Length: 213
Ligand SMILES: [Zn+2]
Image (tube, rainbow, N blue to C red; front, top):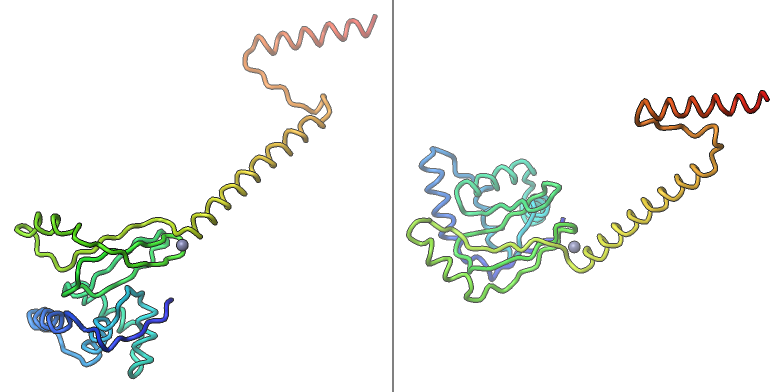
């Protein structure tokens, strides 16, 4: 969970998002609630992506208590209405959200291990893609997510892999040493064919004869 902060000088795209949401609710005969408007207002005054718990904490700090379920259900509604985007890039299933109306094309690098999110500059590279899909797709947001590992997590993961490999090697060596120490009589013989069994029986019979002599 990260500490979010409302930035009063933001709010770009809020009016358009509010209009889209109002239209969405009206078409479906759904209610307009002050909590809903307030949650949307908060989202459009953030400059970073967020998770449900961080948003819930901020909403409660800023205004009256609104339960987590209400915050989450409204987030899902905003995603449905197309005013908030949801991303689920992590193996553990955790997800994060961000406002998506009136935003400049941008990108994020997301560490799949620690969840750190950093904004990356998109410059003009997204324009050709935008032009290409304009006639066939109603775009609400253009955003690029680069998934991978931050330097710290990369080092940690390599270190863990090396430790695991070392543990496997040591265990293999321990088993080999234990095998060598085992008395010959206790070693199990593995026969791969009937011939092997017969040869072994003949050998044992011969040794028995010699002993009797
Ligand atoms: Zn990381």
